[in-house]
Image (tube, helix red, strand yellow):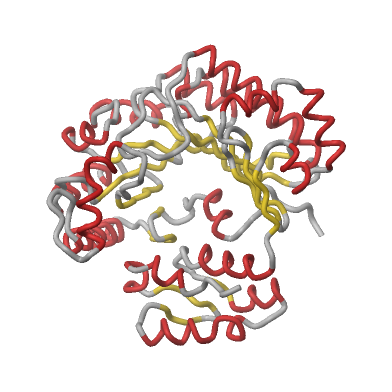
Length: 408
């Protein structure tokens, strides 16, 4: 049997400016703070890599924050540390999230030298007033300059992030963004609906609107339920006409250009998160690093203390807790739940044979009643030995997923 796979995620929590809708673990920071953090991150890479040296790494993903805020030389340095510590596959997919306005020719050339072969550009909207409302630092012209530069320098795998259901947005506004992006022919498009998250400026402004929508009432500024659904349908229609395959609830790709890293998450491929607040799944253990920057730096700035902790605890739940991480050993029930509600995000759905092979029990034995109920509501379908969402099921996916949570 070949070596097991392990995906890598590295969190760069810094950005130029916090966006109005963002609840991710991110913050503006001075250069010396970023430099100190990168030193700790490399120490974490060196300290943990030895426990996974036998695993093949098919994907690496730099997320944030805004990873492209770092200098090109810093990204080359990080990739060098990763290659020294882990067994990166020759054809590995290596993605970096980038915000327009933080890229230049020098950075993009450094990414190429480092082996980064996939860019994820956070456009969100092609409309100036919507970008301003979101608190973005760019406009479409600046995004277009960055996109064209990346193409000229040889990047042939680019994702563009888009966001619909924005305050005051109408269907024709969303169509304008979609058409302008489709004209660029990116390999991948991620199209998400805005979620109003607590703790963000948007929550303070639009929380009552969100409550009205949840009650089935017409919101004042946010798009109503029917208009949001029309945006959702328009996305699938226009992207489908241009040859993009919808392979996950919010993701579309040209054939063969699906994001391998994210597919790994939905299929529960083991992954190791490195950096502030990053999450991991190894075996039956889920664990995450501290979200406190000072605490993270305290743990990883002293390599001797860190390595002694790892060596004494062994890398697993005990080690995770000793390093200030939150760790949870997943029982069989939790693993079955994750198998279902993560796998159902993909259009291909979940394999009944795969469920039985993994858990030693037929899917119908555990979830027969839920599947039958959802089939009756035309929200699920079975075909080719798989269970998957229908078009109607996708639009109410949160409700569908909730029925696969088992009672303790």
